Length: 365
Image (cartoon, rainbow, N blue to C red; front, top):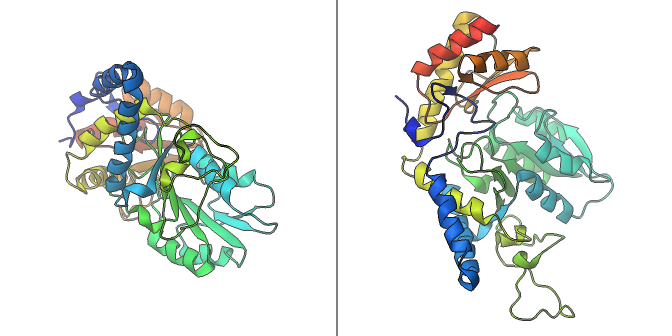
């Protein structure tokens, strides 16, 4: 049985929706969220305190969702923006390096790759010893996705934390492919980010930013806006600009207020399930599908051990785009790109759908 009621989502009639790693279907309750936002935004002078209160309240809820303090959570528009703010804030020197996976997501690597004087070093993030070997005295950061979007591998963040500590480097984590289906303990990282439009059941335009203030007490962004500074009354730009004391300093301008209203509805939905229940449900499906692929002689790039994979099951194939398109014609909505077919599960999926997935896959391969 599905863990979630599929009727709560805008899943196309008769479809098997297994592309949460790309886009989840929208919760029907989001319509009421937009209506509530529209009503609050339309109240003239009373509107700003209302919408700002929703954004601040969301940060507190997200902090609980990630097991950290409310002051450590801010809002950005995307992981790419959050990483860019972080990269721009650091005092880079020629010869500094960062260790990443060769197939890491662009939002994590691109801000680093474009920073002058910063060298990228590549290592298999599943192998902590290989990561340690890639580090030296000039390694400033290890940047990693908690779960790889390419093959569904789940990285041992505790092991990478130990490597980062040994090298005197930051550990920066993208939780996009993890947050929403598995419990998150963000304090393992110095900084962490996550998009909200996948397993967290939100929309684009809003993402989570985490600042570990115990590990990085002196951190400050290099740029700011009206929302990220402490200012009361008329500006006096002749005096020093003071940043907010909390992770609100990540949010330079207005946060996505509409996105915040939507995320409250998403968290209302997700928090109705016991901690760990979604992970247990989702990984029962991934383990079952991997076993069926093995039985059918179809190779997967996803590790079999559920402790080492996420909510994705991936198949490398040079005709991935055509196969995914053909499966969609049979009502199985998977994801393609980067030379792989990806099936991503959430709580609205159930074991009966695996038969349809396998039938569609066999008929197109």
